[in-house]
Image 1: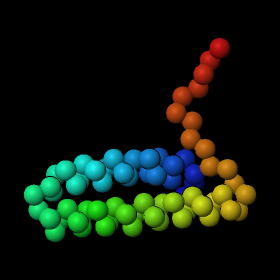
Image 2: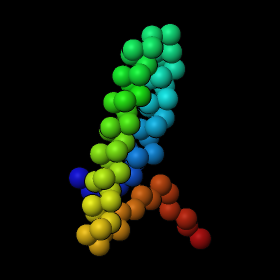
Image 3: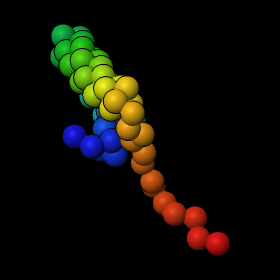
Image 4: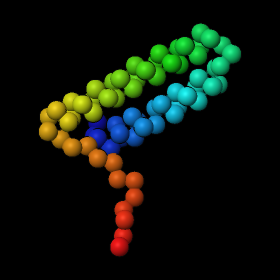
Length: 68
């Protein structure tokens, strides 16, 4: 997987996890499941990004281009 989607996942997963925690706020088992699954998913994404950086790549995410 290239760097751009990994960076988007690293930024977006915590937001999705927070929404899941809020949705299952009154169901402690499901809430903890969302938390643990999200933590594992985020860990995997960060490890994949780290492996790219350690190989000498420089993943980047360009959200917009400044014209001037």
